[in-house]
Length: 74
Image (cartoon, rainbow, N blue to C red; front, side, top):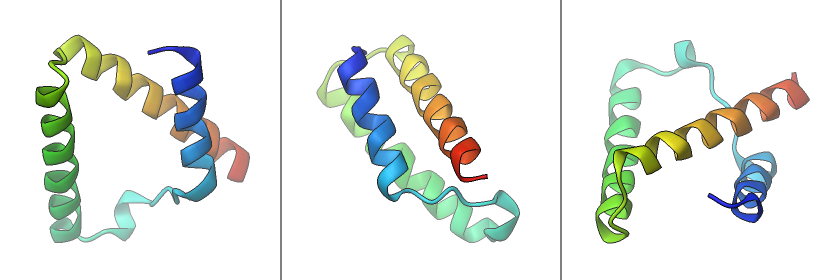
C-alpha cells in the first residue's frame, strides 16, 4: 500500500473513529461487529483479487494507525 493511502487511512481514524475498550462491549455486540467487519473485508478481498499477504499488510497499517490514535488521545 502506498504512503498516500496509508496517510488517508490514518486521517480517517483520527477524524472519526473512537477506540473502544474491549471490556465495555458485551459478547453479542463483539460477535456482531466481528461478523460485519469480516464480511466487508472478505467482499473487498474477493472483488479486488487480494491475497492473505495483502490482508496481513493492511492489518498492520490499521494496528499502527489505532496505536498512534490511542497514544495521541491518551
